[in-house]
Length: 90
Image (tube, rainbow, N blue to C red; front, side):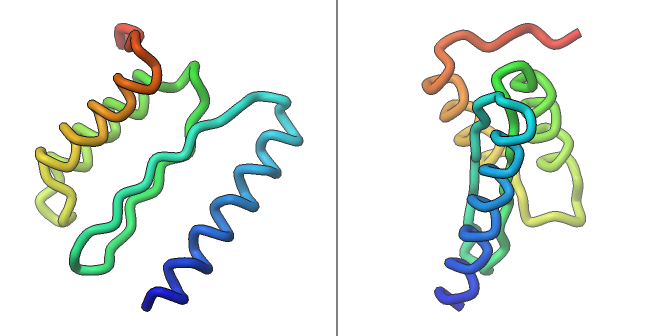
């Protein structure tokens, strides 16, 4: 399974490079690996922070996912630390 995880992260890194080359914007990658081997990977730019935070809430609310409120809280804190100031969502 570790090899598969490495392949997935390699694909994500490649996709991120393509996005940067096409848009000229820096991007952020936020990833969470759950104990059941599920991966949650978010790719976003600095102008999309509010949307990512909203998506974390939506994922935490979805009973069909193993993504919980604790996960959303930890990831939101990571975004907050990285960006210092979170834009208000509309």
